[in-house]
Image (tube, rainbow, N blue to C red):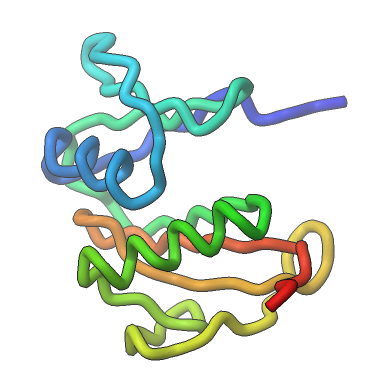
Length: 129
């Protein structure tokens, strides 16, 4: 099986991005390995931030369980991070919507990081409420 090990993301301000990924998504900052700030996504994946002007808007979709999805949704609201239920909508009062992904349709929310990249959180687990 082939898996993604790490990926590099160009960010305008590395310190601001580290804080954002920690506070909003709960990623662990593993420190600086010049020129990268290493963000641990999970045991098999890191997001390596490099402070360079982004050359375009990137879209990253993070899949997780329902509990993590709901927790991040709550943090988006409490931190006043604009989010929406479609790739380019931002409304903060929107409920998750079904969008296709690698495993089929899933509840998804979309928001931007401080550099303008589109981040998506998605869960394939049903909401028990």
